Length: 106
Image (cartoon, rainbow, N blue to C red; front, side, top):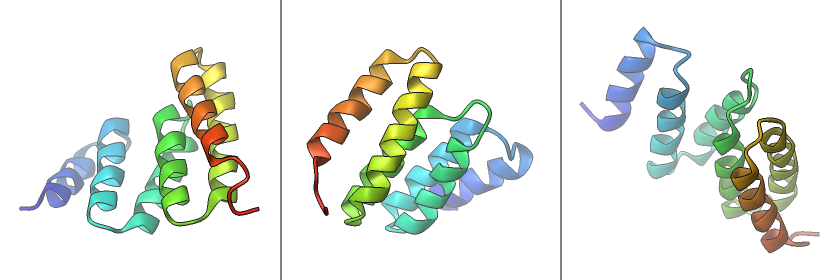
């Protein structure tokens, strides 16, 4: 059984487990299925509360796919959520990445 299959099997028992869902997104990315990975991460950003690391990881993948405008939106939303959850470290990391993207693609 592959790592992905193991994660999917665990998710059947615990479909709302944030760590498992994030792990699945990372496994999809490692398999090269960026679109499925991003979809999984976007779902995590819609949780209550949103899963802050998912914003950053989705933005990184969007940049890799040459979709910087979407990445900037994801980062801005992620910074807002990180601040709302008192996660200054995550907010700072995303702000740095946002600065690094600059006006790429515009």
